[in-house]
Length: 466
Image (cartoon, rainbow, N blue to C red; front, side, top):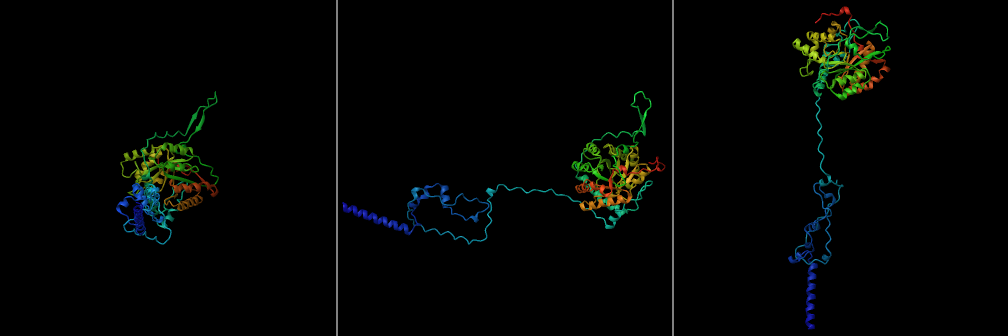
């Protein structure tokens, strides 16, 4: 019995030794039944995948795939610490050697961690109108001021028609762009201005028991009643600044009203919130013109609704004139919006002068054409009238606008006064905000347009005209 037990024990030891030797000689091979008893077989599927996934170098992370939280194999349970049984399968290939280190790679943030991409900002396109540049000779000729006297209208022969036409094309294209970009609404027709008061009237004396009336002299014409106060001249040259195309932009209107007074604001009759604009401008000490839309030479420039056109029946023309003049109140007169074709037609301009004379208004000829009949007919009809000298912003380059302001100052010193017309562009408003406060140091004074108009002597007025 003892001998048989010893023989069996020796056989078991020999078998165990052979098995152990085979396990160390071929560690990668395992029998199918032993593989089923592998420590990984008892793990869940997710942990098996984590345990079998080789670790990746840091610089191999792809921006589109997120690595697992930990690429190291999970530790085997305590029961699996015994050496695995021998396997008969061939050993696995060794992992490839890592590449030699190169320049440090930029580590991209995985898409899952970076969040959604910001959409690209679509910038609105800005349509720019190409303006024709006049010849240098035309610019120099256009800079010459008009000679004016107190008894006769200024001759227009000093400024060449070609230079004025070039200026008119540029100006009308800019004003057309202003109208197209504006959010125009149909304004309400305001009541007409009250009729002019008589030259004098009497009021009862405030002293009780006295029958003698006290005379009171009042302005005769509408333009005098609504004229802005003129600051003391004190021997200085006078400058009038007129800003056209007002009423299209609330923000630009507010900037213009904030300028030093008195600026002359020419308001389009189809602008927005005209009653409030006129009230705020007059309260700030500025003067108001109605910017009357008239037909331009350029066929692609639109002066706006109810514009005065050549060839209209006189009844329709008179209706349009009255409609535009009733759009706002509290203004001293009219200047033309565009109008390089209309102001050259004497037949139609006479209808305008009749309407202005009936309402006691003045006329500023913007001189958009050398053939303009506006100033001559206003003189003929006895209207207070004047002609512009300088266009400030046909070129919106800030340096060019400053040059035109310097030309305005030189013209005023030479002739005693000058009239410059611009628009409420940001570049023009920036230049005026820095230029106007220093006028006194330059020997100049800012005045409204009503301070520069001249009236013909009574013997020259043809009351029956038109």
